[in-house]
Length: 223
Length: 74
Image 1 (cartoon, rainbow over the protein chains, first blue to last red):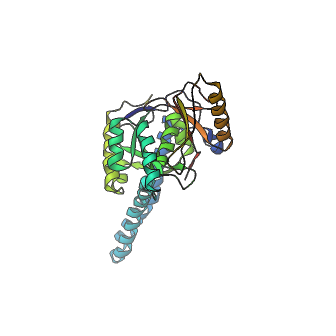
Image 2 (image 1 turned 60 degrees about the horizontal axis):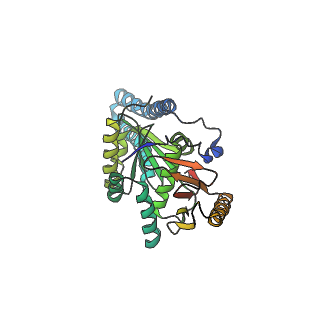
Image 3 (image 1 turned 135 degrees about the horizontal axis):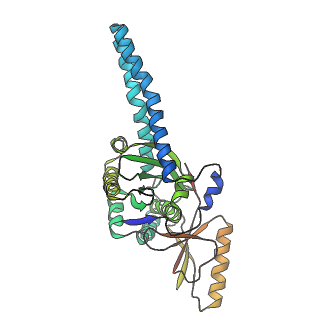
C-alpha cells in the first residue's frame, strides 16, 4: 500500500486552470460538502416520507399512493449511490499487448500489497492526507478518515484509447503530485455513507472498498 | 541511463534515453521533452510510493520521467 499521496511538495496540478472558479479542496471543504450532500438527501426524501405518512393518516385508502411515495424516498438515495459506484466501473480494454505494457508500468509505481489488490480488484489503493483513495479507470473514491463517509469522484485521463492500467496510472500520478488539486479537478458524483456505496459495487470493488475502509479506520484524522 | 516515456495507446512508448555525461543524448532528450509538453502532455517524476512531482523542465538526474495526458472531471 502506498502512503501520503500528494505530499511531495510538487506544484499544483496544471489542470486546475480549467476549473479556476472552484475553491481548492481541503479537509474542511470536504466536510462541508459531505454535510451539504446529507442535507440534500434529506431534502429529497423527507417530503416523500412525510407525504406518505400524512396521506395514510388522513385517508387509509390512499395507502397504495403512500407506498409509491415511500418507494421514491428509497430510490432517490439509491440512484445517487449508484452514480457514485459508477466511477469504479471498468472500461473497455485495449489490445492485450498494450494492456500488458501498461500494467508493467503501473506495477512499477505500486508497492507489493497495492499491486496484489489491483490484481484482484482492478483498483489501486492509495493513502493520502484527505483519506484513503481507491483509484479506478474512470474515477476515484475517497474514504474519509473513520471510513463512515465516501466521496466518489468522476475523473479520467483525456482520450478513450488508453489501456486500463494507463488510465489508472494517469490518475494515480496526478493524485500523488497534488492530492487537493486532484480532488478539485474531479467532479463529485456522490458523497454519503460507505455502506450505501458498497451495496452498489460489483464484488471485486467491494473487496477493495473494504480494504480501503479498514485502512481508513486505522488512519489518524488529518489536521 | 535515464528514460523519458509517454503513456499512450500502446501502454507506453520510450521516447528517448539519455545519460547526463553524454551532451548529445541530453540535448535530444530536452528537445523531445519540450516537444511533448508543447503537444499538451504533462511531465511527472515518480519519487517512490505515494510521491510524484510535476516538472516543467527535464530533470536530467531522474531515472524515469513520465509524460501523462491531462485529466478532467467526467
